Image (cartoon, rainbow, N blue to C red; front, side, top):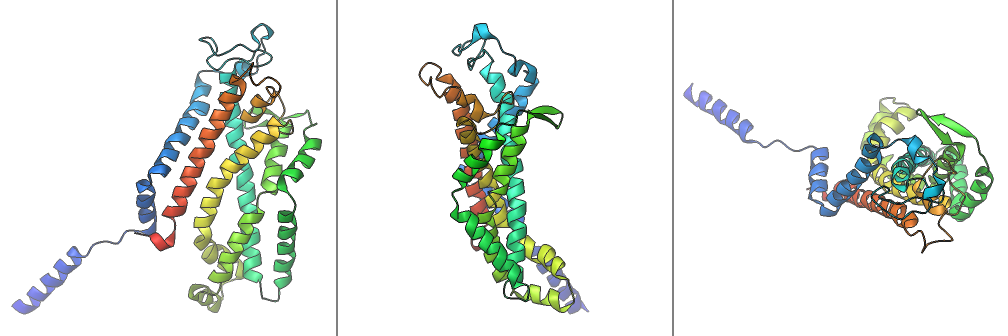
Length: 319
């Protein structure tokens, strides 16, 4: 009787001493927090968010769009910390609300691109080599054709005609130039091809794994297998691509606006704040230093976070 009791107590003690394994999400979070550059990225991006969204509590969009011809091209001063533009508008206020639009364009356009790229990659990879293989062939030839065409040239050609649209739209309670919506669609619809190829290559490997075979054996539909079994295993590269893509979209909007093909006034973005200073870099240096610096800080922060996510989510280094 005593030996049975001792055995039970030993088993119980072994159960108590057995360490609890960490989940993959905890391991990934711990690895991310050990990445110093990723933490720098978090700090930079947090600072930008505090500026563009916290600054809205101290200035209004009406003031940001209010011209004052007598104050045109004023350098930074106590009254205007970031100076004024060609019609006397406060650059600091415009940088606050322009930053909101630039971030919104970056996040929304990449959401569209990620959605299209993920769906195309899942469908083409899953049906490759089956009786529906023609879907894979058709979509991949389309992807290759679009990748062969210079994206910048395509964006410039399309935005040249769309930039002439002077109408406005009401979006989330704000009156925006319709060109902002056009730029979101342009970047989103031309930025999904690379991700589709990444996801397709992953699906080609995953669909031969045992868990997919088991799901197919018990009668799971193709839709359920794709979205419930394969898609969760593709999340890591999708997240990294999305994080890095936001920075790329912000830069794309900036140079399109700087060239005069992007978002048109009165809606402010960091890109079109710089657009008016193309012929007077020396005289109005603050008009390109301020939005340019904010764009660089934002993109650096996003890229540092994207690199940290890539390392943290790498299944080969889950320690």
